[in-house]
Image 1 (tube, rainbow, N blue to C red):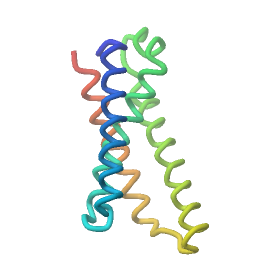
Image 2: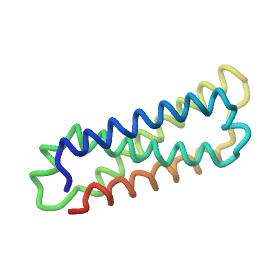
Image 3: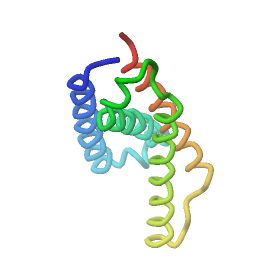
Length: 125
């Protein structure tokens, strides 16, 4: 597994990247112009969440002989699920029109896919 310093670098880079791209996407209306853009952002968001979890619990994870893959992926799912609940709530309060649930399932899928790719990346030796 990568060192804690390397994971912090990955975490910081992915957060900065997400913030910059999200700002540009909002200004350029990319979420409306490109139907798939939301999927890309959820994918990168899933990786970022995994990097955060691994960084926060690095001492517990690195002391084990093998990575607690199930717990890490479940953590990404729980945070992604919480984000989807937040999006549903905001959508109902602001537009009085709940989002389509299929979109939320797709978002969770891409959160998980990003988390899995992030896990594969940091677990390389």
